[in-house]
Amino acid sequence: MKIPPARGVRTGAVLAAASAAVLAVGGCQSGGGKDDSAGSKASSAPTAAAGTKALKGSTLKTLLLPATAMPKGFHLSPDGSRDTGDGHMQVANSPVPAAKACEVLGQTSWIRVANLNGAAFAQNDYGDASQSQQIAQEIDTYKGDGARQVMAKLRKVFAHCATFTDRSGGTPVKVRLRTVILHGAGDEGLKAVETSPTWEGGMTLAAVRVGDAVVTTLYSSSHADKGAAAVTMAAKIAKKVQAAS
Image 1 (cartoon, rainbow, N blue to C red):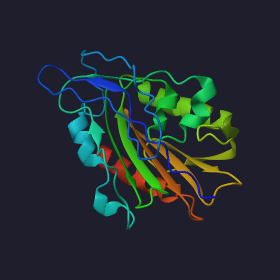
Image 2: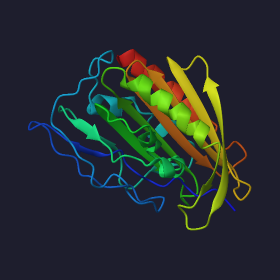
Image 3: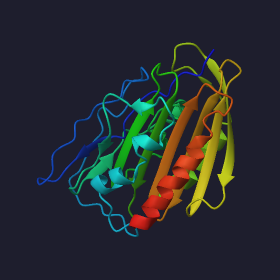
């Protein structure tokens, strides 16, 4: 059978300062997934990320790849993009239990498995006409040593999920995850490829750190490339973040 599209989940609740609009908390349902960010807490305390010129969500949004950079036939998901806007705000995600971490790697905002709240973010996702393939892209910034901690946690989660059973779709599916270090991409980078004997194609995840920002992409593909372009996409976004920092 073809690989199921990534389950759409948006990064957690955000609360803008009085000068900016509050963003609605709602999950992308294009992949039939449930929004696990419900119930997240937020704080209005400023949380600038050093080393990235305190890039705000509205700026991060412009650094995501445009629709013209997507493969032919892919369109922005119906609920569009989401970001933390121009105000000072705290990004807060509901903690991901260790037992659920592997399944979350099949969701659009899979960086949540790091269980570390950020300072700002921007994200969106694209799907083909049949929603059998999906691309997601996201940029998150962190305070202090947060970005390095995120990458370290991702390495641990990838190792833990080398083989796992995904039950999120109702039918148990045996999944293998293969991790590769990305050399020359930002300050550090990771790639993970998910495959299963029951899927056609696969899913590629990429994470690239640039200073205090982490770029993440996901490409679920029903073709033999298994969404390999996710790596190129992450590298391109990372260069844009570096130029803006």
